[in-house]
Image 1 (cartoon, rainbow, N blue to C red):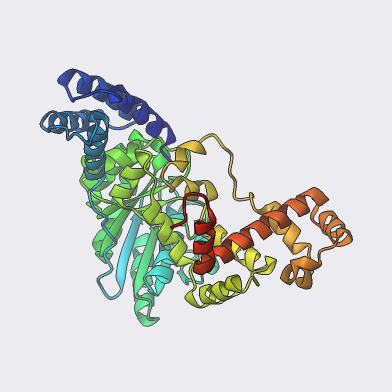
Image 2 (spheres, rainbow, N blue to C red):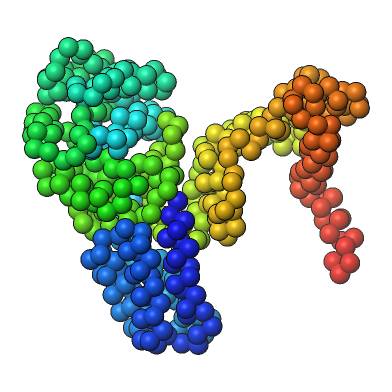
Length: 444
């Protein structure tokens, strides 16, 4: 996410590394590179210029504390300005109304239909709502079928009228259906086009006027950069939408849309799509995104994702097993599945400060655990629960069954045993303290 921009900004700020004080010359030199990095990321020219002018003005107007280098000061100012550029604070979707009606808009290919499914899943699982999806795209082949498939996957009903080519009528009937069936959120998926045209705008404006939605969301492919911002302006001029959703933010995103769109249309980014799965939708936090762009990680989002998969009862059971040295390969396999549910592995590691840059050129796929899983699943239940019984012949059988080697099996078992010892030590404070006291220089 924004890797190229992050690299270029890091190189720009290195200009001030080792400088003793902020001067107009060294700040100008740095910000020239910053502006170039923003323009390369397809940020709107006026937005890039305004950003660097503001940072320069604030930097030259401050005295550098003895504990802060000029480079650190400029990064802090740039961070705050990036945050403000993207909206400052998070803005959530308006869920007032009975039912709440959310109208989805955007060009064809922006991921609007999939996003409708993701939003329904988000509202159902995280906001405890009862959503209804309404299929109003009467033009694109299989659009209705696609929405129905998504609805089945997340167990959310879909209202559609095959043969009815009037999207305004379908939208009205969908809302009535929601009222009669106790669905408190209606998400209306509308038709998109390959480009902005008058017919498209007239149609979606007619839907808006007929149903008076509580929320209009503009869905945009973040990989289209500056074109996304221009399209957003055209839609906003006609619809006056409430917020933006950036899709495909996990792809080869240069950052132009995320950094420019708020300034150009003065509407907040409310959600970001970060993957293909239906749970890959996150609330947009400007400050956290500024952290990531500047290579500071995003530990808060990482903790939140972990908490979503956290089960207090299971955690308590595991803690007892670890303390008694009873943590086994079956428990380990269960923990791997919890980690995988948190999202893309490279994205997760990138949230750890300092790790993102280190793994930038490393190929880390979600299949990283496959070999471990294959080895564990090739064991019997007894072997997973009692790894100590794994003799040489058993290990050979497991290797053959998992398509690996005996060395792979041995390596996994050794790593598991080392991890189990470490986990037990961490739960036993007295033992940990004793170990610390026995180390040279740690005796009292």
